[in-house]
Length: 282
Image (tube, rainbow, N blue to C red):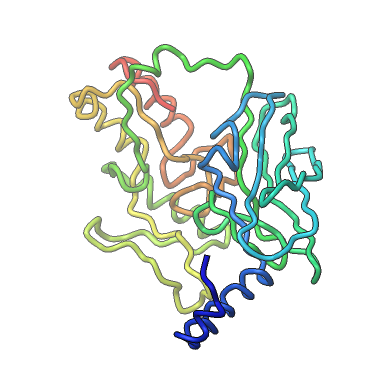
């Protein structure tokens, strides 16, 4: 609504800046996809197997010629052409009839080649990249799945096993030795008062989260009466299977408890004691 002819007479510098901004908007590709909002993703969140879904992005700047949606998962890959209407590109499709973790991103073609709309660090907000740079998560779950009744009214207590409770034995120390014998470089803190390591060591280019405080499954079992006294009836454990890191999301053996935490028998004993107190464990 600005009359630039009149603006040039009154404020030539402002008029020049406005012209530059408009030119930049016309020639620089700027796209918006926010997985939290219905105009870009419907339905929100996880979807049931075989259900329809709508995905879209908005053109904020530039002149994209065409776009496709890349959808993939385990043993699955599909490319869907997108429909251009006004300042929106959209696509409607049905997710596979199989539950699992799916991923998607957008490939855009414009006058100077291809660009990808992928998530930024948030995981839900899109950012334009010159090459494929990750994907948005889309969880597909069983159509007939229902949350168990016992979970709906449970009071849950989440535990990060390495930092919760130590046991009065050498379980953690032996576990550290086990990992060292595998050629890894774990470290066991001498005290829980020591700050966690967060920087690379002299022999590392990047930080490795393999410093441990020595929490064990036996330690958790000893704290069950205290947890029960809080009114808790469900414990959610962070990963406990064998792994190199202290968070153990990089599991190497899903059938074996990490030796720093204890043994499979220790886990069975923890579950047995928790059940006697009316506490479930995930």
